[in-house]
Image 1 (spheres, rainbow, N blue to C red):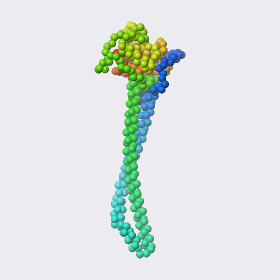
Image 2 (spheres, helix red, strand yellow):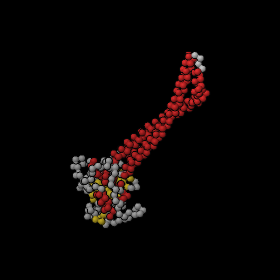
Image 3 (cartoon, rainbow, N blue to C red):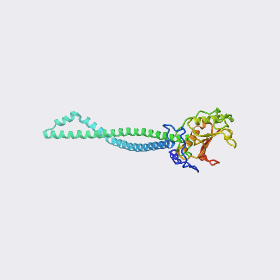
Image 4 (cartoon, helix red, strand yellow):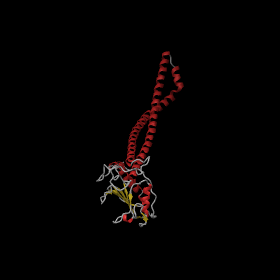
Length: 330
Protein backbone atom coordinates (compact mmCIF):
# COMPACT_ATOMS: atom_id res chain seq x y z
CA UNK A 1 0.00 0.00 0.00
CA UNK A 2 2.89 2.36 0.85
CA UNK A 3 4.45 1.90 -2.62
CA UNK A 4 1.12 2.64 -4.33
CA UNK A 5 0.35 5.77 -2.28
CA UNK A 6 3.95 7.00 -2.63
CA UNK A 7 3.53 6.83 -6.39
CA UNK A 8 0.77 9.42 -6.28
CA UNK A 9 2.84 11.74 -4.11
CA UNK A 10 5.38 12.28 -6.89
CA UNK A 11 3.14 12.53 -9.93
CA UNK A 12 3.85 16.23 -10.45
CA UNK A 13 7.23 16.48 -12.17
CA UNK A 14 9.55 19.47 -12.52
CA UNK A 15 8.82 22.29 -14.95
CA UNK A 16 11.43 23.71 -17.30
CA UNK A 17 13.07 27.02 -16.58
CA UNK A 18 12.23 28.27 -20.04
CA UNK A 19 9.09 27.51 -22.00
CA UNK A 20 7.68 28.52 -25.32
CA UNK A 21 3.95 28.89 -24.74
CA UNK A 22 3.38 30.44 -28.16
CA UNK A 23 5.51 27.98 -30.10
CA UNK A 24 3.75 26.07 -32.83
CA UNK A 25 3.01 22.46 -31.98
CA UNK A 26 5.43 20.07 -33.72
CA UNK A 27 4.22 18.07 -36.66
CA UNK A 28 3.16 14.49 -35.95
CA UNK A 29 6.15 12.15 -35.96
CA UNK A 30 4.30 8.91 -36.54
CA UNK A 31 4.91 7.86 -32.95
CA UNK A 32 1.25 8.11 -31.96
CA UNK A 33 -0.62 4.85 -32.33
CA UNK A 34 -4.17 3.63 -32.00
CA UNK A 35 -5.00 1.80 -28.79
CA UNK A 36 -1.98 3.14 -26.95
CA UNK A 37 -1.34 1.60 -23.53
CA UNK A 38 -2.63 3.55 -20.54
CA UNK A 39 -0.51 6.28 -19.03
CA UNK A 40 1.41 5.20 -15.98
CA UNK A 41 -0.78 7.47 -13.84
CA UNK A 42 -3.84 5.64 -15.18
CA UNK A 43 -2.22 2.26 -14.55
CA UNK A 44 -1.27 3.21 -11.00
CA UNK A 45 -4.65 4.84 -10.38
CA UNK A 46 -6.39 1.68 -11.57
CA UNK A 47 -4.15 -0.51 -9.42
CA UNK A 48 -4.67 1.78 -6.43
CA UNK A 49 -8.46 1.78 -6.84
CA UNK A 50 -8.51 -2.00 -7.21
CA UNK A 51 -6.27 -2.30 -4.15
CA UNK A 52 -8.58 -0.10 -2.06
CA UNK A 53 -11.66 -1.98 -3.29
CA UNK A 54 -10.06 -5.30 -2.35
CA UNK A 55 -9.04 -3.87 1.03
CA UNK A 56 -12.61 -2.66 1.66
CA UNK A 57 -14.02 -6.07 0.69
CA UNK A 58 -11.49 -7.75 2.97
CA UNK A 59 -12.51 -5.55 5.92
CA UNK A 60 -16.21 -6.22 5.33
CA UNK A 61 -15.57 -9.94 5.01
CA UNK A 62 -13.64 -9.94 8.30
CA UNK A 63 -16.55 -8.13 9.97
CA UNK A 64 -19.03 -10.67 8.54
CA UNK A 65 -16.84 -13.55 9.69
CA UNK A 66 -16.69 -12.09 13.20
CA UNK A 67 -20.49 -11.78 13.30
CA UNK A 68 -20.98 -15.29 11.92
CA UNK A 69 -18.53 -16.73 14.44
CA UNK A 70 -20.55 -15.12 17.23
CA UNK A 71 -23.79 -16.47 15.74
CA UNK A 72 -22.27 -19.95 15.52
CA UNK A 73 -21.15 -19.79 19.15
CA UNK A 74 -24.63 -18.64 20.28
CA UNK A 75 -26.32 -21.38 18.27
CA UNK A 76 -23.99 -24.00 19.72
CA UNK A 77 -24.71 -22.70 23.23
CA UNK A 78 -28.46 -22.98 22.58
CA UNK A 79 -27.95 -26.46 21.21
CA UNK A 80 -25.97 -27.47 24.28
CA UNK A 81 -28.73 -26.12 26.55
CA UNK A 82 -31.50 -27.88 24.60
CA UNK A 83 -29.75 -31.20 24.09
CA UNK A 84 -30.72 -32.69 27.50
CA UNK A 85 -34.36 -32.27 26.49
CA UNK A 86 -33.84 -34.78 23.71
CA UNK A 87 -32.92 -37.35 26.34
CA UNK A 88 -35.94 -36.39 28.39
CA UNK A 89 -38.30 -36.81 25.45
CA UNK A 90 -36.66 -40.11 24.51
CA UNK A 91 -36.94 -41.40 28.09
CA UNK A 92 -40.55 -40.28 28.31
CA UNK A 93 -41.38 -42.00 25.02
CA UNK A 94 -39.67 -45.13 26.25
CA UNK A 95 -41.64 -45.15 29.51
CA UNK A 96 -45.05 -44.49 28.02
CA UNK A 97 -44.78 -45.78 24.49
CA UNK A 98 -47.67 -45.68 22.06
CA UNK A 99 -49.52 -48.38 24.02
CA UNK A 100 -48.96 -46.50 27.25
CA UNK A 101 -50.63 -43.42 25.87
CA UNK A 102 -53.52 -45.49 24.51
CA UNK A 103 -53.92 -47.27 27.84
CA UNK A 104 -54.05 -43.92 29.61
CA UNK A 105 -56.96 -42.93 27.42
CA UNK A 106 -58.81 -46.26 27.73
CA UNK A 107 -58.56 -46.10 31.50
CA UNK A 108 -60.69 -42.98 31.47
CA UNK A 109 -63.87 -43.65 33.46
CA UNK A 110 -65.96 -40.92 31.91
CA UNK A 111 -66.18 -39.02 28.63
CA UNK A 112 -64.96 -35.89 30.37
CA UNK A 113 -61.97 -37.72 31.75
CA UNK A 114 -61.21 -39.13 28.29
CA UNK A 115 -61.31 -35.66 26.72
CA UNK A 116 -59.14 -34.23 29.47
CA UNK A 117 -56.52 -36.94 29.06
CA UNK A 118 -56.55 -36.61 25.25
CA UNK A 119 -56.09 -32.88 25.59
CA UNK A 120 -53.16 -33.39 27.96
CA UNK A 121 -51.50 -35.78 25.52
CA UNK A 122 -51.92 -33.24 22.70
CA UNK A 123 -50.32 -30.56 24.83
CA UNK A 124 -47.45 -32.87 25.74
CA UNK A 125 -46.84 -33.82 22.11
CA UNK A 126 -47.02 -30.18 21.06
CA UNK A 127 -44.54 -29.20 23.78
CA UNK A 128 -42.17 -31.97 22.81
CA UNK A 129 -42.49 -31.05 19.13
CA UNK A 130 -41.66 -27.43 19.95
CA UNK A 131 -38.63 -28.49 21.96
CA UNK A 132 -37.41 -30.69 19.11
CA UNK A 133 -37.99 -27.88 16.59
CA UNK A 134 -35.97 -25.49 18.75
CA UNK A 135 -33.14 -28.03 18.95
CA UNK A 136 -33.15 -28.60 15.19
CA UNK A 137 -33.28 -24.84 14.54
CA UNK A 138 -30.27 -24.28 16.81
CA UNK A 139 -28.39 -27.07 15.04
CA UNK A 140 -29.27 -25.61 11.62
CA UNK A 141 -28.17 -22.10 12.67
CA UNK A 142 -24.83 -23.42 13.87
CA UNK A 143 -24.24 -25.37 10.66
CA UNK A 144 -25.23 -22.48 8.41
CA UNK A 145 -23.08 -20.03 10.37
CA UNK A 146 -20.08 -22.34 10.01
CA UNK A 147 -20.63 -22.70 6.25
CA UNK A 148 -20.95 -18.92 5.86
CA UNK A 149 -17.86 -18.28 8.02
CA UNK A 150 -15.83 -20.73 5.94
CA UNK A 151 -16.98 -18.89 2.80
CA UNK A 152 -15.79 -15.61 4.32
CA UNK A 153 -12.35 -17.12 4.94
CA UNK A 154 -12.14 -18.03 1.25
CA UNK A 155 -13.30 -14.51 0.32
CA UNK A 156 -10.58 -13.03 2.53
CA UNK A 157 -7.93 -15.16 0.83
CA UNK A 158 -9.23 -13.98 -2.54
CA UNK A 159 -9.12 -10.29 -1.58
CA UNK A 160 -5.70 -10.63 0.06
CA UNK A 161 -4.36 -12.13 -3.16
CA UNK A 162 -6.02 -9.33 -5.15
CA UNK A 163 -4.37 -6.70 -2.95
CA UNK A 164 -0.96 -8.31 -3.41
CA UNK A 165 -1.51 -8.50 -7.17
CA UNK A 166 -2.50 -4.84 -7.49
CA UNK A 167 0.40 -3.75 -5.29
CA UNK A 168 2.77 -5.71 -7.53
CA UNK A 169 1.28 -4.19 -10.69
CA UNK A 170 1.72 -0.66 -9.36
CA UNK A 171 5.27 -1.35 -8.23
CA UNK A 172 6.05 -2.97 -11.58
CA UNK A 173 4.77 0.06 -13.49
CA UNK A 174 6.91 2.36 -11.36
CA UNK A 175 9.97 0.18 -11.69
CA UNK A 176 9.67 0.13 -15.48
CA UNK A 177 10.30 3.86 -15.67
CA UNK A 178 12.56 4.16 -12.64
CA UNK A 179 9.99 6.15 -10.64
CA UNK A 180 7.85 9.14 -11.56
CA UNK A 181 10.14 12.04 -10.76
CA UNK A 182 10.76 12.87 -14.41
CA UNK A 183 7.40 12.11 -16.01
CA UNK A 184 4.58 13.89 -14.22
CA UNK A 185 2.70 10.71 -15.07
CA UNK A 186 2.77 11.39 -18.83
CA UNK A 187 4.26 8.07 -19.86
CA UNK A 188 2.82 4.76 -21.04
CA UNK A 189 2.68 1.89 -18.61
CA UNK A 190 4.35 -0.40 -21.18
CA UNK A 191 6.68 -0.09 -24.14
CA UNK A 192 8.43 -2.34 -26.69
CA UNK A 193 11.25 -4.68 -25.72
CA UNK A 194 14.54 -3.96 -27.45
CA UNK A 195 16.86 -6.54 -28.99
CA UNK A 196 20.00 -7.23 -27.00
CA UNK A 197 22.93 -5.09 -28.12
CA UNK A 198 26.31 -6.37 -29.30
CA UNK A 199 29.20 -7.04 -26.94
CA UNK A 200 27.22 -8.56 -24.07
CA UNK A 201 29.41 -10.91 -22.01
CA UNK A 202 28.35 -14.13 -20.29
CA UNK A 203 28.54 -12.50 -16.86
CA UNK A 204 26.20 -9.67 -17.89
CA UNK A 205 28.89 -7.10 -18.59
CA UNK A 206 29.77 -5.32 -21.83
CA UNK A 207 32.91 -5.51 -23.96
CA UNK A 208 34.74 -2.28 -24.74
CA UNK A 209 34.01 -0.95 -28.24
CA UNK A 210 35.64 1.66 -30.45
CA UNK A 211 33.99 4.36 -32.55
CA UNK A 212 33.97 2.18 -35.66
CA UNK A 213 30.54 2.68 -37.25
CA UNK A 214 29.26 5.57 -39.34
CA UNK A 215 26.95 7.81 -37.34
CA UNK A 216 23.59 7.96 -39.20
CA UNK A 217 22.93 11.43 -37.73
CA UNK A 218 26.25 13.19 -38.47
CA UNK A 219 29.46 12.69 -40.43
CA UNK A 220 31.12 11.28 -37.31
CA UNK A 221 31.25 7.79 -35.85
CA UNK A 222 29.54 5.71 -33.19
CA UNK A 223 30.23 2.36 -31.52
CA UNK A 224 28.38 -0.74 -32.72
CA UNK A 225 26.40 -0.73 -29.46
CA UNK A 226 25.37 2.93 -29.91
CA UNK A 227 24.29 2.23 -33.48
CA UNK A 228 22.25 -0.74 -32.30
CA UNK A 229 20.55 1.35 -29.58
CA UNK A 230 19.86 4.12 -32.12
CA UNK A 231 18.15 1.63 -34.43
CA UNK A 232 16.13 0.10 -31.58
CA UNK A 233 14.84 3.50 -30.41
CA UNK A 234 13.88 4.29 -33.99
CA UNK A 235 12.24 0.89 -34.38
CA UNK A 236 10.16 1.63 -31.27
CA UNK A 237 8.64 4.59 -33.16
CA UNK A 238 10.66 7.57 -31.92
CA UNK A 239 11.31 9.36 -35.18
CA UNK A 240 11.93 12.97 -34.24
CA UNK A 241 15.29 14.69 -34.58
CA UNK A 242 18.35 13.03 -33.04
CA UNK A 243 22.08 13.75 -32.97
CA UNK A 244 24.81 11.40 -31.77
CA UNK A 245 28.49 12.14 -32.50
CA UNK A 246 29.88 15.49 -31.39
CA UNK A 247 33.62 16.32 -31.30
CA UNK A 248 35.35 17.76 -28.28
CA UNK A 249 34.80 17.33 -24.56
CA UNK A 250 35.59 14.50 -22.13
CA UNK A 251 32.25 12.72 -22.18
CA UNK A 252 30.55 10.13 -24.39
CA UNK A 253 29.57 12.12 -27.51
CA UNK A 254 33.11 12.33 -28.95
CA UNK A 255 33.59 8.63 -28.18
CA UNK A 256 30.52 7.71 -30.23
CA UNK A 257 28.74 6.45 -27.10
CA UNK A 258 25.91 8.99 -26.78
CA UNK A 259 22.87 10.37 -28.61
CA UNK A 260 20.54 13.31 -27.93
CA UNK A 261 16.89 12.63 -28.72
CA UNK A 262 15.13 15.91 -29.49
CA UNK A 263 11.49 16.58 -28.78
CA UNK A 264 11.09 18.36 -32.13
CA UNK A 265 11.13 17.18 -35.72
CA UNK A 266 14.13 19.43 -36.32
CA UNK A 267 16.48 21.22 -33.95
CA UNK A 268 16.08 21.54 -30.20
CA UNK A 269 13.74 23.56 -28.00
CA UNK A 270 12.33 22.94 -24.47
CA UNK A 271 9.13 21.01 -24.02
CA UNK A 272 6.14 23.35 -24.01
CA UNK A 273 3.09 21.09 -23.99
CA UNK A 274 1.99 17.57 -23.12
CA UNK A 275 2.95 16.28 -26.57
CA UNK A 276 6.61 17.30 -26.33
CA UNK A 277 6.90 16.38 -22.66
CA UNK A 278 5.33 12.99 -23.15
CA UNK A 279 7.58 12.29 -26.15
CA UNK A 280 10.63 12.92 -23.95
CA UNK A 281 9.14 10.80 -21.18
CA UNK A 282 8.48 7.93 -23.55
CA UNK A 283 12.01 7.99 -25.00
CA UNK A 284 13.52 8.02 -21.48
CA UNK A 285 11.17 5.24 -20.32
CA UNK A 286 12.06 3.07 -23.32
CA UNK A 287 15.77 3.47 -22.60
CA UNK A 288 15.32 2.68 -18.89
CA UNK A 289 13.10 -0.33 -19.49
CA UNK A 290 15.68 -1.71 -21.89
CA UNK A 291 18.81 -0.54 -20.08
CA UNK A 292 20.11 -4.08 -19.51
CA UNK A 293 19.43 -5.05 -23.12
CA UNK A 294 20.98 -1.97 -24.71
CA UNK A 295 23.90 -1.35 -22.36
CA UNK A 296 22.67 2.02 -21.08
CA UNK A 297 25.23 3.85 -18.92
CA UNK A 298 22.93 6.72 -17.90
CA UNK A 299 19.99 8.83 -19.12
CA UNK A 300 19.48 12.57 -18.58
CA UNK A 301 16.11 14.22 -19.09
CA UNK A 302 14.18 17.16 -17.68
CA UNK A 303 16.70 18.07 -14.94
CA UNK A 304 16.98 14.47 -13.81
CA UNK A 305 19.68 11.85 -14.31
CA UNK A 306 19.13 8.10 -14.16
CA UNK A 307 21.79 5.49 -13.38
CA UNK A 308 21.03 1.75 -13.20
CA UNK A 309 22.50 1.61 -9.70
CA UNK A 310 20.73 4.63 -8.19
CA UNK A 311 17.63 5.38 -10.27
CA UNK A 312 16.53 9.00 -10.82
CA UNK A 313 18.11 11.93 -9.01
CA UNK A 314 18.31 15.68 -9.51
CA UNK A 315 20.67 16.92 -12.23
CA UNK A 316 22.18 20.34 -12.80
CA UNK A 317 24.73 20.80 -15.54
CA UNK A 318 25.55 22.99 -18.53
CA UNK A 319 22.20 21.91 -20.01
CA UNK A 320 19.04 21.31 -18.02
CA UNK A 321 17.97 18.74 -20.64
CA UNK A 322 14.43 20.01 -21.02
CA UNK A 323 14.83 20.02 -24.81
CA UNK A 324 16.18 16.51 -25.36
CA UNK A 325 16.78 13.11 -23.78
CA UNK A 326 20.46 12.26 -23.45
CA UNK A 327 21.48 8.61 -23.81
CA UNK A 328 24.97 7.38 -22.87
CA UNK A 329 26.09 3.79 -23.41
CA UNK A 330 28.78 1.63 -21.87
